Length: 265
Image 1 (cartoon, one colour):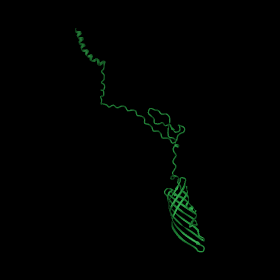
Image 2: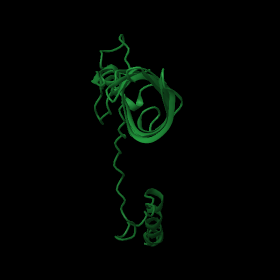
Image 3: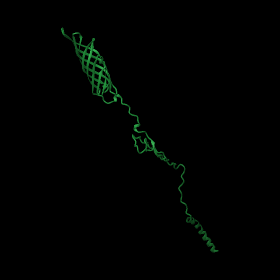
Image 4: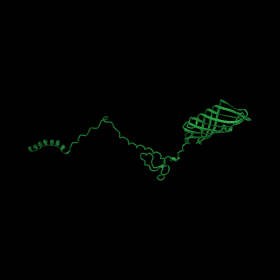
């Protein structure tokens, strides 16, 4: 009975030790895992949505087109791309520069520089007296003119042959036309026969101040209208064969008007 007791005693000592040692040798314990996150510890951030590509601006229309690479009026540049679609083909663009409206006609005051005006007095033709004017523009807003006239004039029903010549200075609101202020100086001479056997003659000076308007069309046709007053300084003489001659000075104010039609170059 001593051997079983010894065996039982050893079993009682060894079995608990093996029971504690066996799990450590054959079945290792699992490692400790991280604790599960608790609500409120970390905020949830959703992933960002993919952004669509920015559209490209259409190219500017060209002033002219090549006649070989693509159809007339079209370009090879595609319109702005759309996500998920491919582009192939042509799209219409503005027409060539020749399709654009023509420039507006230039206004009269935008035409090229004018420097010479040639005109004829219409009122003096009633005399009849032919009076022509040649005007030059030395610079803008200023015109200098020379006047020459020849013809017949009636005084108290008697015909007198007349010569006149003089000059004008014109100040314009525009370069060579528009409203104008004019000063003129004339010399004149005439002779006639107021009575049978009596020879009359006169000579003198005209000093005039005028206000008027000069208009020039796009074609160059010119109209000049002037009005004002003139100061007449004259010397009148009469001569008769059997009585000799007599002379007298005279001065007076008279109204003055000009109406000229001509052409400007």
